[in-house]
Amino acid sequence: MKILELENVTKIFTTSRGKKLIACNNISLSLEKGKTLGIVGESGCGKSTLIRMIMQLETITSGCIKYNRQDISKFTKEEIWKNRQKIQMVFQDSLGTFNPKMKIIDIITEPLINFGLLNKKDKKAKAEELLKSVDLPLSCLYSYPHSVSGGQLQRVSIARALSLEPEILICDEATSALDVSVQKNIMTLLDKLRKEKKLTVIFVCHDLALVQSFADDIIVMYLGNTVEYLSNRDIVNNSYHPYTKALLASVFSVNDMDKKLELLEGEIPSPSNIPKGCPFVNRCKRAVEICYKEQPILKKFENNHYIKCHTYN
Image 1 (cartoon, helix red, strand yellow):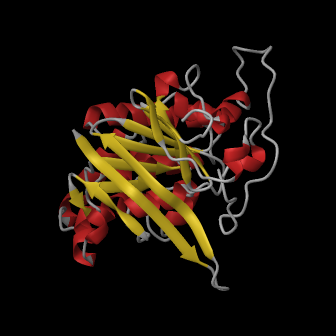
Image 2 (tube, one colour):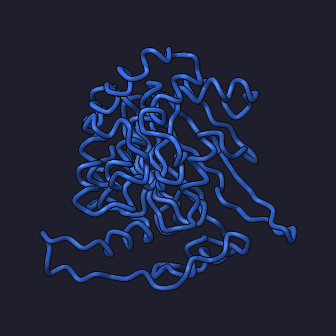
């Protein structure tokens, strides 16, 4: 069952000087209930803008976003507020999303109280239940955000997001600020919670190796475009877009010490000055004449595998 569908979603910002900046260009995707979708790409590729539109923190310029077959992009403010119960988000900077004057017991129960789903007399019991669900000691209950570690703070973020029992959990670079060992623990926790609560997860990250360990399907984004969409099991041996292959070539593995790392040369063009043809053309070693003239279309390559590249279409 498809729980989330994006159809030709585009987001264009206008700068103070009147220039158009294309943050997301004609994005289409569908997500099955209970699955995990990984979204990867370099900084500035449009990942965060895409999920902010799904969260309705940004309005879309064109296209539609359907949650359980309802076009949520046309919701009123009241409908958006009610829908927030079903789609929740864990942010990269957890400390920045908390009121430093609030204790953790208040932080993780605030959403429930705001929606009228919790009596204040039951707050302590519910807070303890939420802390246990993310493997945090009850001693954290009356702590302030600045007095716990980064890993613990991210667990608090997860507990707060799950307090409303959402169907979709979006993680925006949720582990990028953490040590590698702590990252592994958070990923293990997220996977456990996904299975226990039958969550659908969107995991946004610039670390392809980390996404590989967690996601069912992966979208690779470049300069606001989906350049490849494929199953996780195919990412290593059956990815074809030059950008995806370049990302894979830049991943170091202790299991393959003889592998020669290949760095992707060149800079990402400005979203306000995208090349006329393929957005990746100035960094691509496979570029041919048509790549400089026409932008490719995302087409089905194989079963559940889509690619946006002239040399494979």
